[in-house]
Every structure is written in structure tokens, then in C-alpha cells.
Length: 97
Image 1 (cartoon, rainbow, N blue to C red):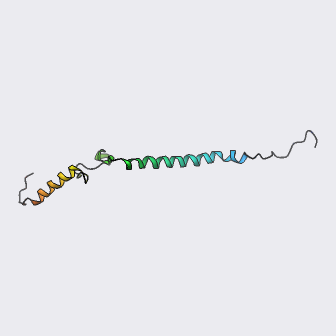
Image 2 (image 1 turned 30 degrees about the vertical axis):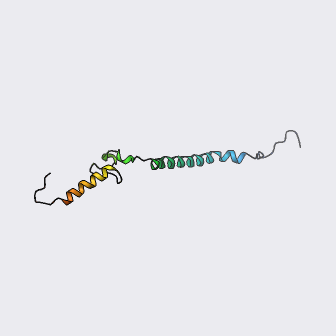
């Protein structure tokens, strides 16, 4: 070969394909990481004994003020006893309010 001869095309290097697709692989990896992070964050409240919805005001999606207490709490038992008293009381035309 003459000393001033150059090949018609650049020879392929083994890492050329990986370098070319690295940005796409990075995007997919970031999407997977983001999805995993979202699922993790959304599943964390399920491990809590506190119900977040109890503390959110009704105007932005929380429970209404007249919602009965959660079952299994002392407040629920008191609420149920009050309902039983009201149900056992004789009904008249004029209810005290």
C-alpha cells in the first residue's frame, strides 16, 4: 500500500454501537428508575398505621366532617352506642335538636 493511501470508510470500533445507543439506554433506565421510585413512594403510606385521608381537609379531597370514626377505635364504639341510644328512643313528632 502506498503511504498516502486512506481507506474509503472508517473502520468500525467495537464500542461504536454502544456509544451511539447509550443516550437511548440512559433514557430507558431513567424511565424505569422513575417508575420504580413512584411506586415506592405510593406504597409507603400502606405501611403506616395513620390514615393520611383523616387529616386532609374535605375541600381538597379529605373525609367529610360527619364521617363516622374508623372501626376498631374507641371513638367508633362511642359513636355506635350513641346511634343505638337514638334508635331505641321513641320517635315523636317533635325531635329535640
